Length: 458
Image (cartoon, rainbow, N blue to C red; front, side, top):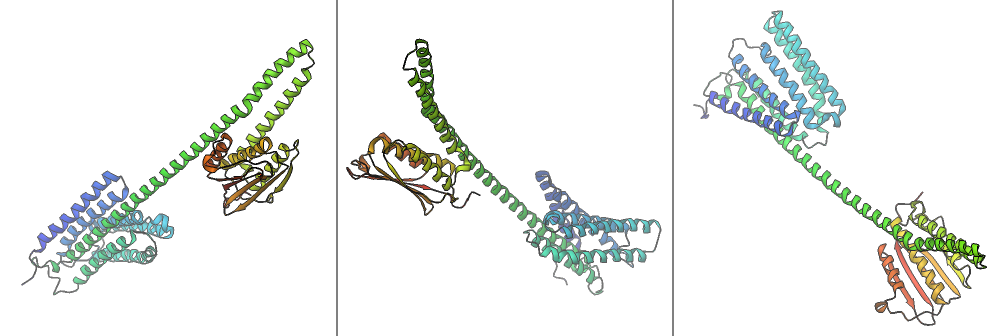
């Protein structure tokens, strides 16, 4: 008495139904994703179902020999080709292991050659023994190729490899069990009440487990692809946000340029126009003030040129090093105090220093520096000005000290437009502003500007 409740025919229908459902699932997935791996997977399962059906018939024949039936060999060979194509797509062997990919291509060609030889043997009416031997020889060649490819695949760090190997192992074990039972007469008696007495049972169970492993492998692969797409989308969003920030920064720079051209140069250019008309009138009337007017035109023109040079310098990225800033700061200080009884004391770093001031910071830092010097000229009545520039803790420190008359400064009560502008410009480059002043003791202004010590200019 057997412990099996379901006889072999009903169990086969159940197994075939499972495989058919997986075929429909693969075809449905193909309609959704439009990827070749799904229709190849569906055809592979369908070929195995047909092979099992014909094998079941052949096992009932007297003197059964594997590979003697042309239709079984053709369908089985087609299944192997689809199996190879499926493995290439699932594991991405073409990209991860080109050698294994070429070897699998060779194995596909060998299967096609076998199919052609089988057709020749069939039409030549050779014996079933010759057909079977031909079948066994080609299958041994394919097995040898598999022994080379499988160890290489195991070394790949691909998430779907484990599922593919597990599924293939189940299929191989099913085939080995099916082959072994043929040589055990007490088991291989094809008793309908005992499904274990049929070789196809072991093969079909192996294929079902293989299909389940492959399906899980594809699901995991799809999940990883979705996560990669999400990650790529997040990176794209970050890039778009960064681009938006850069565009905003460019817009601010454009606005600053527009404002500077209007404020710094507009009035001077208007003065040149007015004075040129006045000079023409004076020339016609031979006014003795003509020479002074023309002199003012020249002075104003030179001032416009100097300011234009400053604007261009502040925007040019090639001038972002601290060394270049130091050179420009020295030049500005000497030019500004040239006609004033003030002695300048400079303590600047080497001009070879190549730490970088971000372009968007450099311009405002320079304007703050110029404003401080102008305030000294206009208000301090100083005899000595000490300017120090040094780098500390990724900050460029600018210290300007004078020995002038000073003033009473209270941080919380400072409402002067000049100081407010200095603080606002310092906040633009995320800097720090500090001022110390007392009547009769001069004034010290300290500005700290963050610098980039990693993106070093060459």
